Image 1 (tube, rainbow over the protein chains, first blue to last red):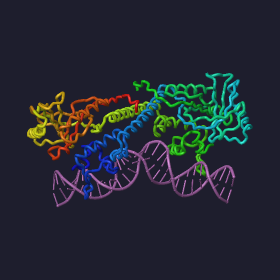
Image 2 (image 1 turned 90 degrees about the vertical axis):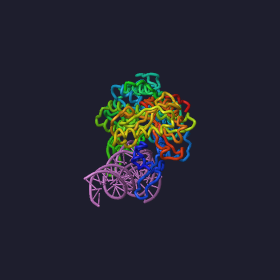
Image 3 (image 1 turned 30 degrees about the vertical axis):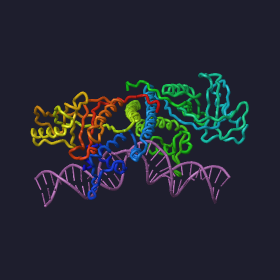
Image 4 (image 1 turned 180 degrees about the vertical axis):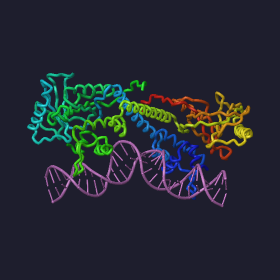
Length: 275
Length: 275
DNA sequence: CTTGACTCTCCTCTACGGGGAGGCCCTATG
DNA sequence: CATAGGGCCTCCCCGTAGAGGAGAGTCAAG
């Protein structure tokens, strides 16, 4: 019979762990001295201890080990575990990819986050604007038009409104643009305004602070980010206006979010052996 | 000014998280109503919220984010993070490799664990035994011889004693064998017995229960395990006798540990696309 | 005025033990 | 025989990054 300290040395499990495993009923001492409370183990239990240790080294939880001891299907459990580990690995690859992307970039102008936008109903309208700046006059007119067409129409909560630029490339003049705004339910359409169901989407998001002059940098950044980290664009970027001329006087305070819809990420494993 | 629920929807952070971030001083509301205690946020804070969110998505801890906000070197922090993630990934690859190894194996006769054996001083003796069974007569004689040579010699605590089989392959007769036992300090040597410093070692360990007739299976198992999971043997296996004829009558109760010294694991990424 | 949605603070819970306090037990040494 | 030191016991708190919920206060609409 071995006292806990001796068994600890032989099994390479800490005393704390042994007591914990007893509490969790996955490795009970062979006996307990009724007078002193000392736990007593037998050498034959080294096998059981090794089994618990092996499962822990595989990353199984205490509860999973208990299930196995109760007769659960080990193969199935391990198969699930493998799936979970593969997913964990995917997350790590994704993070590594992004970290290396940041490290390779000289300055960190933008922080990219991943978001899930739920499904919603929007009304949309398209037009071609002579100048980019006309956008802030055009958008309110679309809203008024839609409200005239559908009195009592309500915008979604939280509000969600964005513009997409439909030209293949960046243009300064004759910009083809589509505006969309989320509403609570579909309504009447006309030749300018139509309703559609916008499916749930995963997007990459960056916030651009300041005037629109330099917003091209944000587009360039998020595009390169997506490309280098295994995201595939699933549509044109959405420009969401948060703070602007309508509520902030100083151009420095303007705030715009750019959302790039993407498909499931396939993390790329670039060569980072130099790290 | 936005109430916490509104800001939560816009920032895609939960209300709980926002309150937590305030407590941790990494994202403070623009103001707090002195009468009601309501937190009030501004749209301009969406940028800061996105920054926190981006760092969290990279797996940075709250403390690390706080450090960054306090002006810590982001590049260095991310470099360290990348190193940690790479290590995490290595662990996952190792676990995946082992799990797939188990799943491909039909029965789970043995559980392999990884241990670190600390450095120690041992006395060793080599011989060639006519039969494998002679081992249990030979070992005590070596111990007596060593004690005669070094009266007062003390064995290490915990006791550690093992045999290595020095033939290149398995043999039934004329077995070349080396026995070693850990002691507290070196002593006198002769032509049979010599002392040496056994360096710390990482070993794979399996327990074999039952008679020695079938111990070959355990050797085969651990060898195949090492090979298939990217371990490289760093010496002959050590056989440690735990329970045997000296304390257990029934052969079924005998217990032997086999330890295979290995070098650092290089997890193999076999094709598991079918999982 | 009431109701329901929203917010507040405060409490507990998660997994796996690590670290330590306070107290009992055992053995070796003087 | 007395004591000292080490081993063992139980009990409690600690960490992550919030989630979940209780009980109470607040706000806007009907």
